[in-house]
Length: 228
Image (cartoon, rainbow, N blue to C red):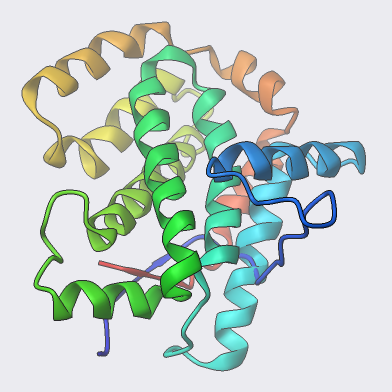
């Protein structure tokens, strides 16, 4: 099957190595990769730097092998897991998005042991007519993509003007990406939570980044394939 793709972030394939010989990989992919992120922090990489490096490497891998390259799920999930910390930096307003995003990434990580690649999970759902079924791997992949879209749009809006508040940036990003797929109760809760977002200065401090670095990150070529 030739799946439809959508351009996103950036980073190449990265293999996971267990800490101890024979140690089983935990079902919580995000918790595992956060440990690796702490190691990155010790080498001087910030959260955003780790995310940028991860997706840049995935993008490089895909570009070097052609658009139809069948990317393995494991490195894809490793890279996506790093994004969960960015949701955390936004506070309670996006806690719902963080929980949903983490859950879907973990589901895909579990599926990687059976299906191996992105195309394989899409083919599986097409064969079984479960592409649009609640909880299917294809729907989980779409939810992960929406989470990545949300983070990307939020930071692009945030840097569009020095006068743009995080509340304005987040509200516009949510309305564009996730709101169309959420019920009224969730949209209302998100709207109320926007008032609890950190200030512009507080966010940059939490991320330990300058506005210039984030601006550079948002201007990078987002040529990573993900299902539409």
